[in-house]
Image (spheres, rainbow, N blue to C red):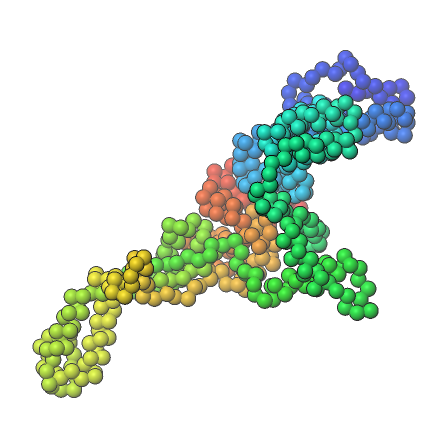
Length: 502
């Protein structure tokens, strides 16, 4: 531990009080106390050698901090503790619970994964024998080597660094290791494994775009920038970087205006509601299920979404009704006998039985067909089967032919979806900032319980929080009057709020 010396701002190491902490709480308290002491010290009163030693010591402490955080975070992630707070992963939990930015949280998780794959580097960080930035470089270099050679390469580079090698010397040594262990390039992936793009949003919607592009992607982007980023004339005083920025914006605007960007991101492609004519005949306006509608969202007893859909899919789906039917061949034969048995007589008649005395006039035939058309198609014989076996051959003969396919109906109309996106901006589950383009619309009062598709009953939810946390794990999401949201765990032991109280 450090204690103040006689001169202002001076400090010395107190060997008597330097014992190891007995618990995590004691260790954190000692760490906070030591750093707090250094932060309050009068750095201008320190000698040059003390200032230098302090800076070197802080770098060693930072190395140990990264190693310790990665070790704890790995155990935290392996146990899935973040799920107790309704988060889908450690990144979102760090953002929400430790109040750091998304990029900082992603960096912490990246260090956890990096050091899990490079235990020798983690040990060197814990001992303070290598800096954080050098550790990142070593990991990046040895990640390019075959898996069997990485551990040995880490040990070689760390030993060289401990012996006083400069970073440039380590880079040369790493390149030599790569040359000696390189395998023939047979994948031809064109750099696909190294591709990445990241868009970080900042204050007032501004953003920063960074990434590593494959040659094909870089060539395509270069073509767009060259085509749309040219100077407009002598009055165009934009810099080349400003023109490139405006070219990307113009390309995106044209893509959206052309209708090539889906307006329904994140939801299932389509739910097909399959029903038979027999089922439709059983659903009358006086039946317990209520009036017949092709869209189950407007029925009092909505049909289940089907085996391929999850519970939350009915919240936000494009539903296409499909009607199937059968031929009642006995009825068909009976009608045929009726027509054949009809003799000369009056110009009109009624009934479906044979032996009618009226001649087969147009009114009689029309009435006969109208009375029996639905029963003809919905009997037990199978219209699809007869057409399939009589007209098709091969594998196509095994595919059922629908009688009717209704127009796909959006559960959430586009205008309402835009209003929900304008209000929520991103997933409304507390602590989650998945953008609206990757979210689905969730009904706060479920559709199965009569919940309306309205602005105050709908909110955005990312696939994890919507389909998993809410519809499978049982979390409940509440939209407050001020636009904030509250999430309540199934056992009501945890309550998360999207905003702190004022």
